[in-house]
Image (cartoon, rainbow, N blue to C red):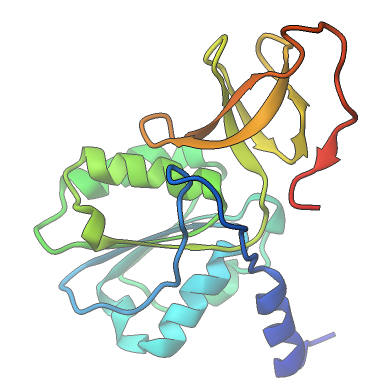
Length: 215
């Protein structure tokens, strides 16, 4: 059944989340806005597609000079057709972020001065692409972000340095060393991940019941 425009607007609102205030290192995500430039790079995952669609509604001509890299994740084909209809200069759909990295790096390495970068979707996706973009010499002022969809975090264990993706509970078990970890708001831009520390180091086995983040 086709959704009404009101229902679609409600879906867009549901994909947004107002993060509570926190420590200085925690990223603050904004809202994508059209900018004047000769070229635009747009990278999104899952519900992040909604922010790109909103961007196109604000300035349809933007897409003629845009490359879109999109990772659907668990949304499947929900947004692929809509993004394809934007008629971007280049449109790539990848099965995972890892699969999209070579294309992303090539685009960044070939970029000319003035490239504008738009990131939307999960914090894990945006953090990793921001790292790639800044490593390639793109200034922070040329990078915009907008969070949409899941609030799951990309976490690094400070003990074994392993990364656990899509953490949605606190505490959680490290997928590498098995320690019970506390979810912290400290964010490492170098690792593009939040930092997690052992929660029962002084009292082994004394681990509180996991609770859903932001519940």
